[in-house]
Length: 164
Image 1: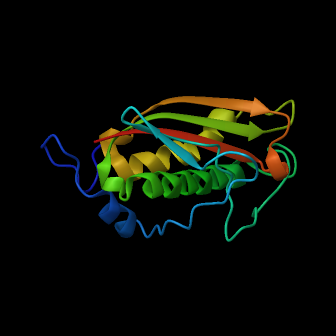
Image 2: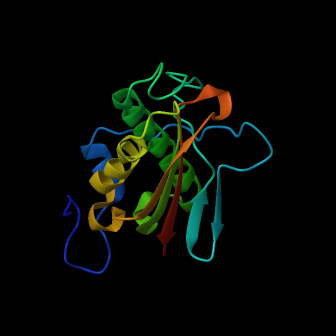
Image 3: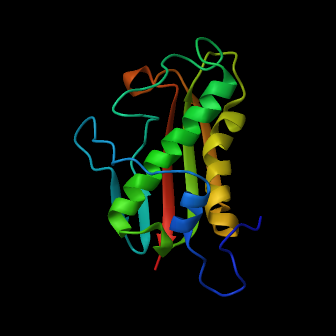
C-alpha cells in the first residue's frame, strides 16, 4: 500500500511528517508496570515490550472482548497500544524516520471463550502501521486470544521494527 512520503528511492519518506498529517501525537513512553524496559535495541531492530492502550496513565476500558468490550472498541484500543509502541520505538531511535521496516506485530486480546475475532481487533494496530509506514509497514503478525491481561486490559501489542 502506498502512503504519503513514500517515493521510489530506497529510503522511506518522513514517517514523523506522516504522523503529523494523520493528526497523531505520540505520548510520553508509558512507564513499565514491573521489572522490564519499554523497548530494547538489538542487531538493527527495536523490540517493544507489550504495550497497553494507556491514555494519560489510565486504561480507557477494561474487561473482555466479546463481553464488556466490543470488537470495535478493542480495535481502537489496539490502535492506541500501537501508538504507545511507536512512542517507545521513537524513544530508542530518536525519530521514526530511522525505521526501515515494521517486522512483526504480536497482539494479545483478552476475550471471552466464544470470541474468535482476535485478528480483526489486532487490525487496529496493523492498519495504523500501514497508514504511517506504507509498504514498510507490512509485517508478520500473531493475534492471540488470552484469558486475562495486566490491569484487566482488553488488548496488549508488541511491535518489532528494523532501522538504519
